[in-house]
Image (cartoon, rainbow, N blue to C red; front, side, top):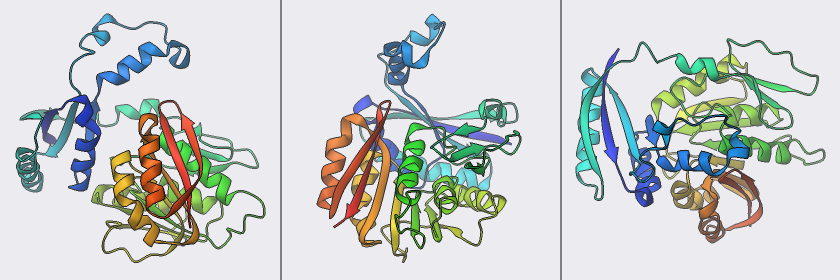
Amino acid sequence: MRYNEIIITTPKDNLESLQANLIEHGYVSMMIDDPADVQDILDHPDTYRYDYINEDITRGLTRDPVITLYFEDSGEGSESLKEAASILKGMQDINWQIKPAGDDSEWLYKWQEFFKPTRVGERIVVKPSWEDYQPSESDLVIEMDPGMAFGSGLHETTSMCIKALERILGTPGASTEDAKVLDVGCGTGILAIAAALLGAKECLGIDIDPDAVRVAKENIEHNGLADKISAQYGDLTEGVDYKADIVAANLMADLVMRLSPAAANHLERGGWYITSGILDIKEEIVSEAIRDAGFEIEGVLHDGEWCAVVARKM
């Protein structure tokens, strides 16, 4: 399949808000090239345990980050590209261009070489369908192929959400056997699937990306959990009528802050709110927004430069 791309250059301080803006408009399939990621590797050699860094990688560390959006070179894809261009014209502090990106046949499945069975929490193990894995008696295995959606379980933000779910749902005597879980921005459906395996009675995953909803449904069906989990296109702020005991939102800081009041509306009193996609430097401002929405912070998990905030509705 041939496709086109929009390449957007933005100042570092504008990167997260630009991501949030694009996601809100439904553009979630993107590649982010942020020089700060390379700098983080250089600053933490013991963490990443690299043997050699090519000097070509270290060039341009002071340049601005780049976001690339991809569009099919077809009728529907061309219309989506035009809509994105129209949105970008109204944004400040960015430079962007459209260019043909060629054919995706060479790299579309290359990432599969690097996706191996991975223990994400104490009990949850994520494995792709093309890998063999012999689980222990206590393991809860999620078999999934990420496809075009975010959420393989390998990223720190996803793993922290799963660890929080394990603590809430997996604690003996926690009285969560009848828990209902709402997974906001469900991506592959991994958090809803983890919650169901950990004992949640019912789960709903929502996403504003139709591709993510399709992938989530496929993963839910593949794991034999269609009787417990459903996935649908939806925006938490409108059109979703679902009261939950736990809301999980692995998004990003700006979106977490914007959606926290809506999350409170979808929770029963005493309900849990698990949020991630939050850089450590934004922990305080996000926590303040969560408190302002009617929550009490129960704890904060940290992993690398990321954190996850766990709160309860007062």
